[in-house]
Image (cartoon, rainbow, N blue to C red; front, side, top):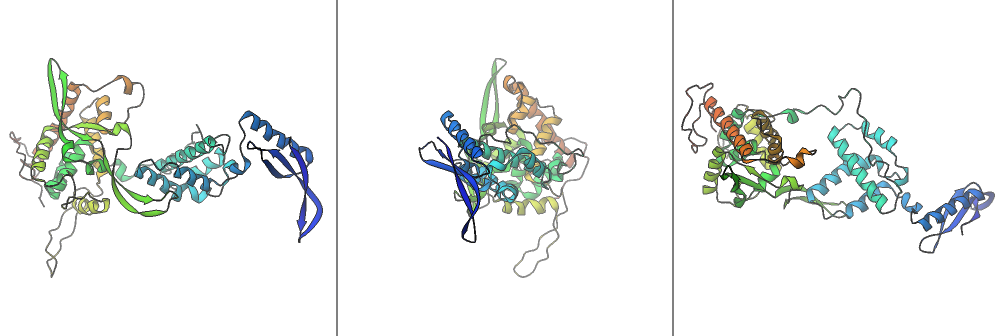
Length: 436
């Protein structure tokens, strides 16, 4: 039975006549709990009886847990998630350190509410997608707090953030998000980079591989065969099978202490990313030539056989796309020709956007477009509609025509002297591109 007692205030080490009330109540483990600061005996006893009622009903929340700072609980929650992919955990830590904890680290769990959180999110000067990810992570952490009986309800669960009436702040797409490359540009860039590196660019633009997925391709993943019954026969085509990727992230201890950057082979982030991508004939031939004389297990890697680091790859791609000045020969340094810009700012993500843009241009059916991109198709159509061999052949024919049409426009018969265009068009709309 809860009961109340006086707690006298102390000033300068001496007890005064002023007091508040403290309530004592029985906790689930049979020990006495207490809570201080009540103005009257009645309010103290009423609060204590509420606790004992909640304990008997199995819905009691320990006030000490509810007062735990959000930052302390967030680290406890992260410690329980160590089985997740390293890249996923690193992304969560970055959101916590740079977006969430600067504001909420010392806020007690019980004081978090949607009104304050939404106002904070609206004022963040970061990309809209990053804000949404931060709110999703906060909500997941608070759901964990509910499950562990730190708080009774998650104040963020099911809430949707209102958008600014202007719709402009943080919502406009960046140049890279809007960027895609015409096929002539892709071919020029591939030609300049040479067979090994250029083929990585070309494959990304015509298959939609994510950069990390391309890095994770092993020889046995490339040029497998898809076989499906079709019109009394069998439809076959070469495929690239995606089932792993190289993740580059900061490795940490359970409490978030940084241990250094690592590059680790991991499974894709979700089941829809595990897929087989149909490869058009021109690309299959190029890949076959590449595998014949490439000595390494990884299909797209550094000359020493190690996977590309993001920074190392950027140092290859940026001058090829953005251009570079001429370098004169001097002692210890060889001469280097100047490169004119081809498409400044073009990166591997934009090349993935390029592939989906090509798919839309040639009218690839949604059931197939979502599958090939590794995206989950929303809605009931994602359950009921499936790619057919006819859809696959139509996509392959369209991509083949895009490639050879661009080759005709550039006046090229081969790339790196490897794939000959047997019936080159007589109409040439631009000069042959300079090869590096």
